[in-house]
Length: 403
Image 1 (cartoon, rainbow, N blue to C red):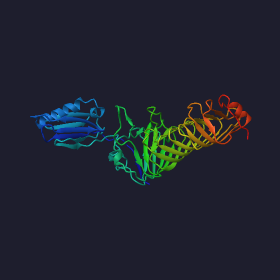
Image 2 (image 1 turned 90 degrees about the vertical axis):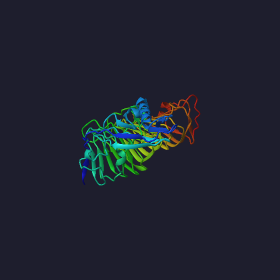
Image 3 (image 1 turned 60 degrees about the vertical axis):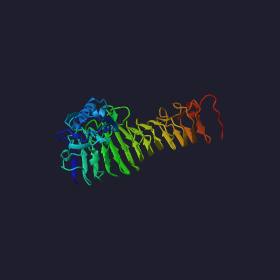
Image 4 (image 1 turned 45 degrees about the vertical axis):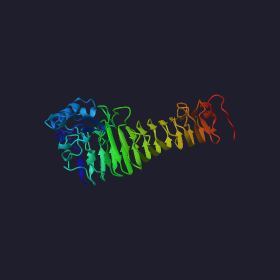
């Protein structure tokens, strides 16, 4: 198979657009828009196309809207010119209004962070089906994702020496990002993130076809509290296996959707499931961390801590682990089994005292059910052994029925 490697070494060039005023009728409007935010100039009596253009340029240049401040605005007679303030950072502008107003891109943006620049790829072409795609240089991949098709790569490897792949939802300049943020990857492409020497990438955003097949070896640290380092979404099935690092399923934007059939997290890995997403079966080990804003249907855990804001269907906890249930609704089966001294799981229901229902409950071997506010209703009689009943907190004056 052919290999196509990210180089990221093409020289930066600033994007340039022109906005030409073609009419000067009294009360006609000239509207310039970026990211849904508009600046309007209205022609007055006795205006010329040049005086209107001057007014447009002044309004654009004086704007405090951060998107407009990414562009340097100049004017010459009836033409307003917008040039990217930072070479290689693209922008999108549109125009409307009742006046004659013509928009033209005269110079396209490019540079070392443009994935749509063929010179940034070792093959001299954009990534294509059947290729092995490798990202192993510390050059951010940021712009031009709309030009990369969701091709059926033979493999996609984003190694531990890579940097950032994709754009954050919240632009550091203070606006919700409007340019395409994610790399679109075809269904069932084997994805490996964080292989080899290096601290791991600090951002990877992938929009995946119907089947996900991702292995995360390690990642760097997240850049802000709201966005996991690796964010995967769009799939309707598939697997995530995270040995170490910070991984999310559609977890930086509640409008994103995605379903993973099987998720496995080990060591100190963190998996965050976004509000609109589902992990059907999750196996949790060691000191890993699971945060479920969306749905984790079946959780099997033998270590670490799981915090679930939506009721799972099945929880099986063995060994030293915590399952913190902060949602409402019904969990069909809760099984917690201690494995000897210092290896007692805890089902925690005290951090969010909303009503919840356990249909079938088994707490044994010194396992703990912590429900000090008596939030849990047991549909069927719950089973405790002596050690677990002693260790648990079922609230003041619980009512117990022997069966």
